Length: 240
Image (cartoon, rainbow, N blue to C red):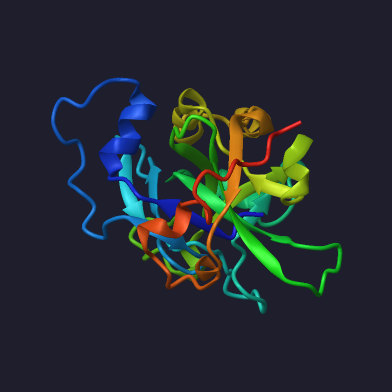
């Protein structure tokens, strides 16, 4: 699952990791929103896309997708197995909507302190082991000239976790290597190839995590210390 993400950098800081080259000037203006340390579904995180078929663009897109006839809450995550099976609505979005990349510095998950599912939960911040930015695959119900509200929003793709990360949560966002992130948003990438790309996400061994303060349970908590360990010198859990 991917329920909260962190975006603490400007667009160009993420972009230079994708194009694998130093900036020769600002390709995108600094983000007026500034660093975000606790972005929930229903907000508008920064995303890269090529919906119009031209150069890479940056835009804030509504996180969640709710078709006009959908009676439930907006869908914020798209399962890889549902995409692979060609089921509604993701097969349609892959063909007729658009593919986007949501840059992130990590995401939060909550873990029960005991085996009692009614007991207290504590938040953890999961990020790249080398503190590299992550490029999360997303699908979007894009339409030319339409505002990216619920009917034209996006869902972040998730898959099953393996290894030690299962102890944190049974699902995680699909984080693509930079070269595959570029291919994912390319309009020339076929539907078959797009599905193949999702199978080559960063492995569980690429991530580490640590416990963070309880305040991040409230999405309004946006201070930089939201991602800091709750205790100085605390070591993250090691992956098996």
